[in-house]
Image (cartoon, rainbow, N blue to C red; front, side, top):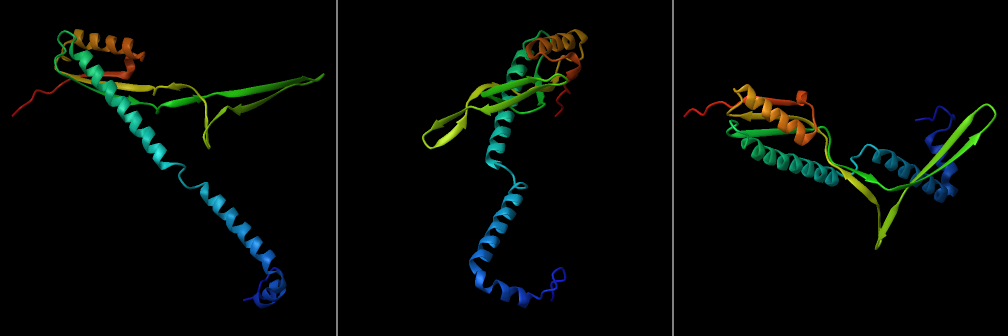
Length: 183
């Protein structure tokens, strides 16, 4: 095989590199490091942390469903209830940060330059961000299946209770009749 771009053969290239093994090794190691760095961009970040967030979100939804089911079953005429809550996203953390801004006012243009830096807390040998607050997952919708849903007043009472308790619109709530159990 010949290297077409330079007109050199592999043998001639190896002969030229013979006295420069260390430099060739350093170039090769740098190329490998860059390759691994580029490949790491396509690898998942932290699967364990993502799984934990999903578990926490699922537990939040299940806890909310149980509490709502208990509440709604106490509404006169509702009877047994089952509740399904769907969430738009998982729990989010807002991190503390310093912000510095410089503004310049030229004759023709105004410019604002903003610099943001997250505040880190060192514990032993690890550094982590400083959380300001945690935002609970946003509720996308609620489905309620209950024995008394055939009564329009019961459906209205359930919908009003959910809109007040969760702060979501009535369009995000569905209340339907539970099927009778047949043996």
